[in-house]
Length: 317
Image (cartoon, rainbow, N blue to C red):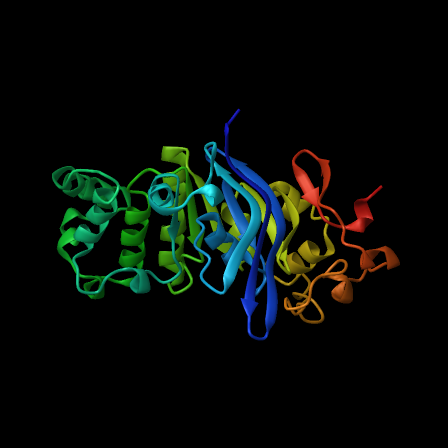
């Protein structure tokens, strides 16, 4: 049985803006074990990217992490400060960002940038430079790429360089925030193949943040569905894709085109809620075909068995 690597407990993130408080992530809890490929799925504005940043304690102002715990390999990331936090980023948890061009220094060779990640964590410069070639090989890039500048590389190559830098210190958890958004379909598949291969070889937990539930269903071993800052359903891929329970999850799946399905995709009616208003009940109630009076109360995340959790009053009994 795989050992527990990541445990998130009651994580809450809010943005305190001039226009009011944005309740971006509310009371989120989930866990992941070695080699898990977890997809965090939801519409734009659901809070999934904020959750990803919070795992690294990287939420920018005016955002604030209000609680409670993000434990990786026994270490609570949210309790770390200064040098301890800097060292945890990279060695315990790392991130692949949506736009690799924005995260790479345009005036420095990519090999030097990868090496710098290791040097800042105490690796000797000579050893770091040797390791760069190994890392480039691990992401299917030739060694000579190390002497290139970011603008000389394709989008797919830049993303591979970003992945190489992210895995340089063998982190326990790798967060990938929409890593294929700006790439063509063929390169998207190659990048996802690469992430999957890294997970299998290193026992790393990969947390994929995506709006694409079709991509999640193809790659993930577990899926967490987010809506209005909360996880409304979490379980194995087979549970979420084949036996979805939450009305939002069902709607999300029905809205995806499927050539094997005779019927047309059905969009979810209505609009997501304004996260500047605190939730007094189930946030999906105004769009839900099964809405009941009890939905005015916030449903807990219920364990329905086999590692399958759902936040819906339909399953309270």
